[in-house]
Image (cartoon, rainbow, N blue to C red):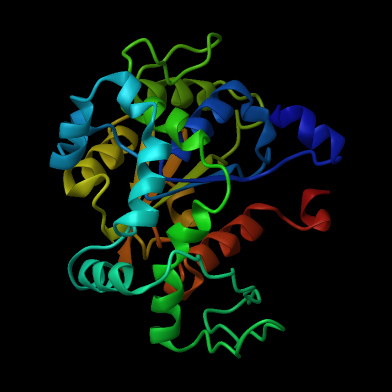
Length: 304
């Protein structure tokens, strides 16, 4: 579907990014259609990438693995019930207590969504709604209160697709596969060597110092993959033959000028973030990602 959509839009090359379980779809896309990335500066980015519980060892997800596949298939219905009748799924500690109190006090009527104005900087301008009061999005308390309503907005519409994703991410039943029939891989430690081979054989890169740039932004506190999962995902990329890992302070140009490799891998932990809100513009990672996407697409004069 992706190549046909891009052809319809007359878009020749793109940069790909994913959040959480979207990493499965991203890897399948680049393994199947690597030519969709820019031929001079191929760039992809992962935000809080999903790691199977067999590697992350996250306790509550290991317990979920024990559930029968039909029960996981009803995840959306269960999640919606919890969201509407118990507490929002996101949140622990103080936020959890706040949500429990709020659930006991509020009526069953869900609040209407409040439109938020977009901003290109980390500072968010106040938003004015014709149906509500002025919102100061630079006020941490306002932003935190809006976040408490996210799950209500999510489940206000159909969310049955969540159940299919839950089965996919957990590989329940065992016959569920992460890969398409054309390219076989079982997990990221299998997919990365395949991608490395594809890159090394890319005619557009042979004989040049160019290589793919792969970027990962990890949440500082991630209840979905934990520290083990984060390390395992990074190891998949840094352990592959022909890979090069660089530090946050090391420019891409410095890495590419050294011994030839198939890709450069950069992993960064974003302070103060957790799994669900990692891409919130206030934390800066999404802005940095977009800057790097822009840098990966040279101006027409440079291409010529």
